[in-house]
Amino acid sequence: MAGFFDGLASKLTELADGMGLTDQVHQHLAELTSPNGISTLLAQAEQAGLGDKVRSWIGNGQNLPVSPDELRSILSSQQVQTLVDKTGLPAETILPALARFLPAAVDHQTPAA
Image (cartoon, rainbow, N blue to C red; front, side):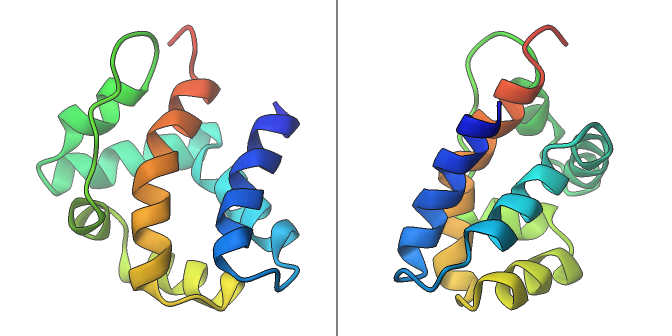
């Protein structure tokens, strides 16, 4: 499991241009895909009308894609700002990467759900 997050963290850190942010990115991905984080993510997605997308990431089956704009509507401004603060990257860089990798990360964390 740690290897999976390290892979995600390294992909996002590559976007950070080798700024040595692996620990911060890893920590934030781990928070988003923890049981509490996934519950929060699902609740936020429900409020944004995108619960079907996040539910598709949980358990088996195909993961529905999410766009950066949809992800922005799911995540709170504070969550996005935390990502910006921890990585030093603009939201316009982080959200497309997160939209690409978050469905697989949630799916990986919830294989039997």
